[in-house]
Length: 368
Ligand SMILES: *Cc1c(COP(=O)(O)O)cnc(C)c1O
Image (cartoon, rainbow, N blue to C red; front, side, top):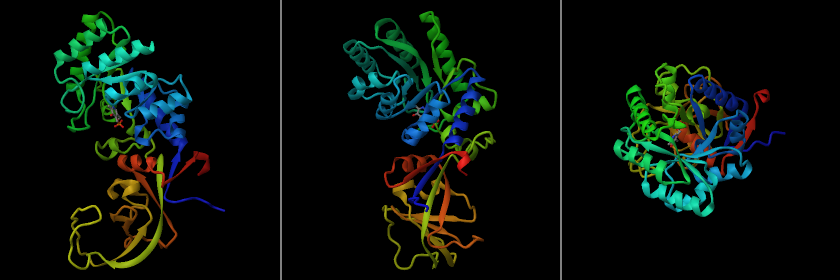
């Protein structure tokens, strides 16, 4: 008897392991270590275990709670906090995160103070803002001064290196210009302190494009990768790369059809606002065959962030708990009780992995 519960997120752990191993190998061949970023799947334990099985160099998250859970299960895993720590979490942070990204003197002083109190040491990567305008020192001089300050004045804080984040707020592409700049700053700091920096961290999934193009500056020796491993959508959909060496169906959403009816495509009555206060546009294309599915914005975010495996299905809208599909063009017969399958974009992955209302099923390749 099949007792599956829907909506369901089905994770193929073998495909996940494959993606982790391939990305790690690609980076290793270019002298680059990988921090496996697990915030996108809310650090779901079976997925985290695949990263550990694949001998990832370190695990990273923006959420300290996730690193705390990982450390609680296995203290020997190296962890990296990739959101600038909150002042209020520094005392916990140095217990559960071996390395953190930083951009504020006041936080570095606080880390030193807490480390002194707790008799610990902590490693920091100072962030350079090279134009994306989210975190990091905007002034190169200030970055270098702060690096020297950590090196010379903070005995419990180790200057592990420098890094950059791109393509998150300002949508800036990583290229040889900005990553070259990061390399230059690293050389300058190394010259002054008289030793090598352990980490020069050149960004996230989008920075893999430089490796794929054979253009990664040799000084970059670290990347923080989530999306390419977990989903492998961005470099295909937005960048147009052939990413056949990775799976793009590591995670599948399965949702159940609860209604199938012919309905007009244009709403009837005075059009006002939808369930979320938006004013969508509707196009009148006559009567259409529609399927209503039991999954909604609460589980996936926007409906255009999931992709039906059957490309004859066209998604047209959603509210908190419902998804509406136009199935007029579908060749097969879709009925109430059928299960429709989807690939995910990042937003849907983030929501689905977090939701207590979405069941999780973990399979191996051999199960299919
Ligand atoms: C989320 C995040 C990453 C990982 O980004 P992906 O696109 O998932 O690879 C890397 N660095 C920082 C600072 C992040 O916040």
